Length: 287
Ligand code: PAF
Image 1 (cartoon, rainbow, N blue to C red):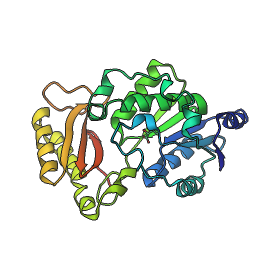
Image 2: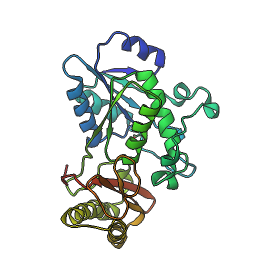
Image 3: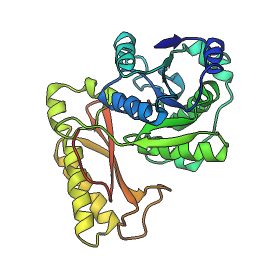
C-alpha cells in the first residue's frame, strides 16, 4: 500500500493509474465497519481498478467542546487493516496540507438540511463534513466514493452536494455493520464503559421493533417516534432525537409511516453520542 501525505505526490500516482478508482474517506480509528467498506470498494474496483482510503480527523466538523482532541488516533493499526484488505493507496494529510488558509478557508454551505437532526445539536458539523469531502474529492478524483449507511444524514447531504456542485463521482452507500448484539460499529463505541456498552444495544433492538411495528400495520409517525424515544430513554440512554422521515429528503411524513421512510435516532450515554438508523423496508440483520 502506498501512503501519501502530500497532495502533489498523490496526484503523480493518480496520473499513472487506470480507473475505476474507488474511494473510502475516513477519520481513522478503523473497525470492521470500515473494513467492510474497503472490501466493498475492492469489489467495485474489480481487478483493473484501484482502492484509495483517506484518514484525516477533520477539525472543521467538530464543534467547541466536542471530542476532537480525544478522538481516537490509531494510525499504525489503521494502516495494517487497510493493507490487509488490499487498499492500494492511503492519503494521510495533516491539517496544514488540508487547510493551508486555516480559518480563512472557503467553505461549502450545505443548506437547511444541515441544521436539522445531527446539525441541530452540532452547529457547523455538516459544513465541516461537506467542505472536507469536497476537498478530498478534488484531490483524490475517484470514480466512486463509498460511505456507510450509519451516518445517514451525512450521506444524504453529501449526495446532494455531489449533485448540486456537479462532482463527477458515483456515491455508493454500504450497509451498517453491527456487533453480534446489534450495536452499530462506530469509532466512538470505544468511549463506552462496560456498563454503558451493555445498555447501548437498546437502540438497535428498538429500531428492529419499530420497523416490524410499522410494517405490520398502519402507523402514525409521531406516535411511533414517541414510543421509540420512550423505549430508548427507559433503557437508560438520553434520546436526542428519534424521528421518522423520508429516506431521500429527510422530510417528515404526513401522518402515516410509509415504506420510503427511515427511522433516525441519536442518543447519549454519558458524554458519548451514538447514532443509528433503519429503513422501514430494511431486513434487520446482525454483523
Ligand atoms: O464519516 C466520517 O468518518 C467523516 O465524516 C468523513 C466522511 C470522513 C469526513 O471527515
